[in-house]
Image (cartoon, rainbow, N blue to C red; front, side):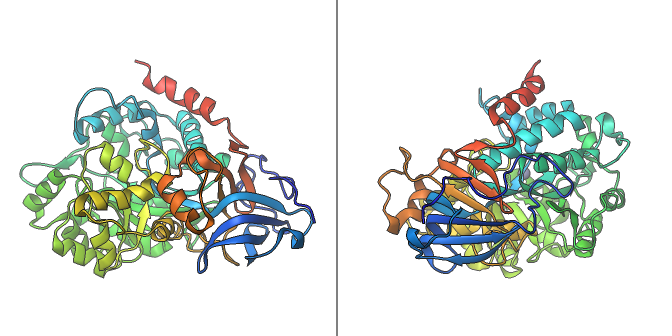
Length: 486
Ligand SMILES: [Zn+2]
């Protein structure tokens, strides 16, 4: 039977943010796709994969189905189809700095000053507009779920909004309008750094917007978000929590954050050892490394994700790997901010699952993040083949979703959330690809610009390379321009 074109069958996306979010598909809706090639969890890349979903979940996945055996109304997916990608670490507002922060020299710390200038200008309405555009850019890059590490909580001077979670709710709404899932990683941020005597420095200037007084104040605000006992906030949003870093949360304040993670089964994230100066200050103040400090307070474990983990000791690697703490590498940001190259291979060998994030959004391209993990390792070790394309693809998909609290996503398999990313293989970058090495080609040479179709929860979000809900370039331009105007 003949195949129809992309998107000719099934429910159309574009309803906007209805109750339950735009990714909550009609439970009765059955959709079928026939992927020329698809990467499957057990079988690698397979041809002629017939994929069926009922509502937001896959119900059957069958490879090696010839086109003549495909039911009418099935959508053909040319190229290589992957599960939805997960961006495990995002600060949406940093997107405004792209390019603008590249002129001249500077360090992580001078970049941070620039970032604070943008933070100082955002209000719930403008942050909704910016995040909606940024999450829509992510969707166009194949990202079905974003982990938003959110600490811009309050109005200027630290004054709470009428709804003290207004900023967090704006981010949840932004994800709905962009057609993606979100884990709102509500971040505890209490101090501006560690002083020379080891005592926490008070928040100052734009940082006042990040603080909740103490971690009990933080926990009270997080409870007011109204997550259910499983940490769900809406059908498309779940709760995560974070200790911003050992710079921003004194060890005596960490327990309520960890307890909140346990209470909701919520992922616990933390920035870790991104800069050598952070390690030095932590050692001087507490006599242990940042990893040692998190270990001491009971913050490590399989539900915990550490972001960057760039400058580690052998003992740090043992503690993180041995506790199965997840590693989130953000290689384009780590390169952009001159952080260094973290010991990804050593951590994964020690037991840490690998996930990926675009963090500051110097670019938004998880294929680039994935290959940079391997390429960074090659530059450091002088050896190739440290991470296979399949291992990197797992980091970008199933491992990323799991560390954001969505273990049911990131695989094209019955029962999983019906997320699909189709990468065109007829682009200048990927033309000539052979079936046998299609995954290697996409991971090591593909880009976000090669993503042609994205389905989230059974519904089209991107079709023919176009976002169906948001005019992404215009939305980014409209949101960012006012933030950068002097
Ligand atoms: Zn970050």
